[in-house]
Every structure is written in structure tokens, then in C-alpha cells.
Image (cartoon, rainbow, N blue to C red; front, side, top):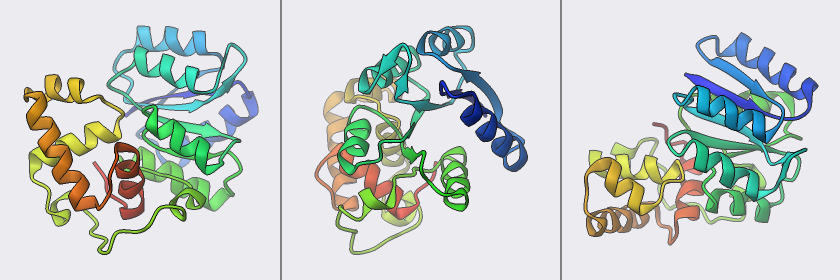
Length: 209
């Protein structure tokens, strides 16, 4: 997997790069310290699959940073790294297309778990955010056990990746009405009412690509 780490603190980048190199040697990691550097890297290497993004960069701030990265790399999953882990910040980032959220204050063991989850194709959301969302009655560990069809599973993973209904329809060669029907079935299975809640539910259930 090719991954881009975007953070303006060299110590943070170096520490995370070392951790990823030791525990996930199959990850091909790139670095950037500014939004403009990240955008240039994505233009050079459009096959980046995962972006680990700090929302507070010297040349960009907040959800505008996420929007710029999502526009430059619409296919890549973008997971937020941030010192601001308030539930409202986490949910706003997910609503804006983030495929997960790792607080910078996460202690070492939990950080390893979080990185392992997102690098392994899963969704990580802080426990403080999960605690505010009611858990489903049942907790199956896979899309198949959840009762989703293979096509619905594809739609779910594109939803988690922050893709719009229009992009999902285009990518999977489906009509907009079919995508809407699949999403309704997914929401029913996950016992949620929105795209943001679906991402949080996927994290709670430990669903993976």
C-alpha cells in the first residue's frame, strides 16, 4: 500500500514513519509537511491509497484542508490525525469525507492499534466518539455476516471512503436510484440514519475492506 503522511511536525512524521516501518513493512510511505507539498505529491503519485492528514497545517486549516486533499485524491481514503479530538470535530471530519480519525493524544498502545486498523483496511474512530453513538443490537465482524450483498459491501466501502452517491454510481456503473436503495439497506442493517453514523458504526463493528 502506498501511503502519504501529511503533518508539519518533523518529530511526529519521523515517529510515525518509524512505527509504520517496523510494524507495517509493506507500506510504502511518503511525507509532506505542507498542504502544497501534499498536493504536489498526489499529482506525482496518483496511486496513493491512504492519506494520514493533520488538519492544522501552516498553509491550511481545518476542514478546508480535508476538502483540498479529497479533491486532489478522490479515490484515496483520508484518515485524520489531530490534536482536537472533540466528538463534534471527529463527526464533522467524517461528514466531510474522512474515513477515520486518530487523535494525536492517543497513547502508544492504542496508537499502534489505530494505525494497524486503518492500514489494514478498517475504520478507526476515538472511543469518546463511539461512546456517544448507541451500539447496534448485534455486532457482526464482517459485511457478509451483517447480511450485505457483495454489491452493498462495495457501496459501503465507497461510502466510508467519503465518496458521494454520484461517484459511487459512476464507479460501480449503477443508477443513482440503485445506489440510494443500497444505502437504505446498509443503513437498516447498521441501524443508523446517516452516512456519518454508518462510518462510526463500521468502526464500532470492526468492519474491514
